[in-house]
Amino acid sequence: METTSIYPRFLLPRVREALRDTPAVLIHGPRQCGKTTLARLIDRRYSYVTFDDENKLVAAKEDPIGFVDALPARTVLDEIQRAPFLFTALKRSIDENRRPGRFLMTGSANLMLLPQVTDSLAGRLEILRLFPLSECEMGQKNSGLAKRLFKKPFSFTGEGIPEEELIQRVIRGGFPEAVLRSTPARRRQWHTNYIEAIIQRDIQDVARISALDQIPKLLLMLSNQSGQLVNVSEIAKAFQLSRPTLDHYIALLKKLFLLELLPPWFSNQNNRLVKTPKVHLADTGLACATLGTNERHLAQTRPLWGRMLETFVFNELRRQASWCEEPLRFFHYRDRDDYEVDIVIENQSGELTGIEVKSSATVQAHDFKGLKQLQRTAPGAMKQGILLYRGKETLSFGQGMIALPIDALWNIK
Image (cartoon, rainbow, N blue to C red; front, side, top):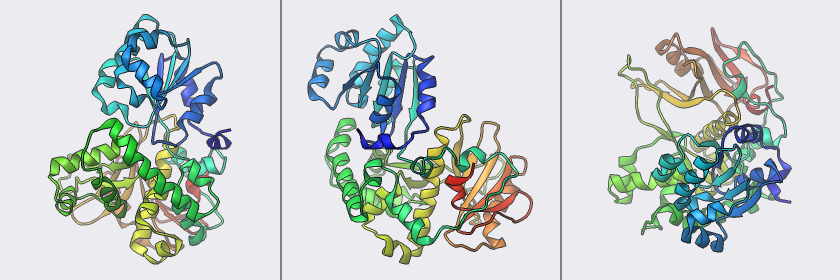
């Protein structure tokens, strides 16, 4: 049994739904987040082909059309990013037979950034993003704040979460293999091996770069900046790289789902808004291992702890949003007067909810200054501001402003 199968994956219903009316479905996300296990849970009638098998990869490259034509009626194509040359043959096959659910593909790189995919399978392919495990999935409860963000009023009474436990969750992260390891040291070793494998193999699959030694250094710097505005020019100067080269490296890390750039929310009516993105590492366990930080160091280094906690909250909300019925878009907010909101979430109706993250068990009125500024900036769109803290109770701080226990993030129903 593969280890990830002991956890429920709440993306599963969406995958099954897509296969009922779409010829090809792609589950993509970082390597070892559970894509293969999820694909094998879908339907035992699916045959399985992995392009981690070099023989299969060579055969597909030699005769793409013949390879696709010989596939069984329902086939899982695992690690499809290693065989981008197949997409033209897949398009031809789908155009001849548009029966739903023919191909279920997995990929460890963002294939929508590859032109041959967008050109070949437009209108024939549904893409679903699988993330590392969420706190909801690890707790085996289909709950979570993302589904409640635009449903108010609501409240939640928690037990209060000790900082030590919260730090442990942040350092553990959500990669299934790391989660199941018995000690922090063993998890750290898994994360270290994971990064080395990504650099030595996956990067070479999607891009040919000569300076591989720069990637670990860049990942270290970006891990240290997780939760902050990204200053590409400053990083380029530190690495003595040209801006286009650094942009290429960052795009590569995004393509492999190792980081996300959180865009700024802005209004055309307000020219005082900062339009620089924030960087977030895709998993706090990975970020902490890259930085070499442990529980004691993180507890003692308050600025770093605050940034890691913000990234942890952002990642958890992104993971929950992946199985929500309504698409949610994520931003941050900052203006030139230094008012800021850690996370801004927008629904399809253009409504906004702002999220602030605080590591302490107490909260004060001035902690809402950024949320209230966003409310003034977008009075018609802003539905509520939520400050997550380590207390036990939901507290009201004026119209549309609440402090919410941080464990509501994964426990609220």
